Image 1 (tube, rainbow, N blue to C red):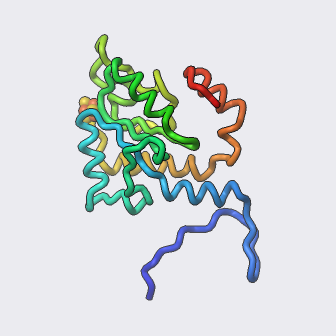
Image 2: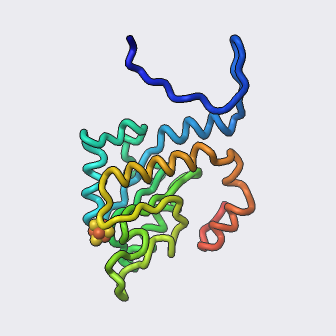
Image 3: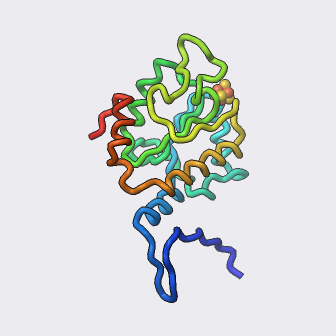
Length: 182
Ligand code: SF4
């Protein structure tokens, strides 16, 4: 018997010899199962990401085995580690270089909130400089938590409207960060 498991089809109308669904759902399904990560790792949480990529946790099972170190070929910016305030503009530049649609995960306490480093030099959460889609708690989060975060993001991606990136709400969100929306 074949061990190949098929992904469940998106919602639609089916009958003998046909299956009809919407473009939103097909595109959402394809995008959610092929999120290429851009690891932006500055400290300890990055090690957990390495474990998440390796054979035991095997991020390839989620279609994300291909890390992209070019922002232009990445879908999912994964920020892992303490981000100094001086690093904020660099992180933002990387985000701006990513093509739409793009998603962001804050992995670990430092990226999410500054963690234990409540000091003058540390950014108290990357959402001070870029919008974040999913936060993963923990110091550090275990690989299972990172995988959980990726599955949460996959749900968001799968259900995102095809036209969301052109919506006034999304443009307003970027504008609130002072990010060029053109
Ligand atoms: S959250 Fe904890 S483990 Fe992660 S980078 Fe910060 S100090 Fe290191």
